[in-house]
Length: 55
Image (cartoon, rainbow, N blue to C red; front, side, top):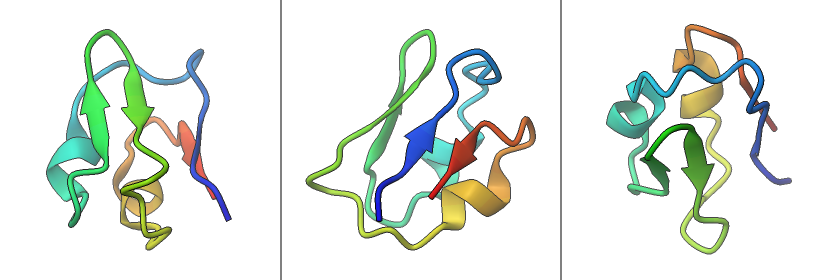
């Protein structure tokens, strides 16, 4: 699986960054995922208030 971020929905709020247990997400203007660090746990999907992240 892979985390996908819908850049049109992402507001760059940082909720996903705070929720990620392995620090695989970063936010500049929009969220970006480090696919090498991501463990596909789905925490970011559950926590995103904009529903901009999917597995």
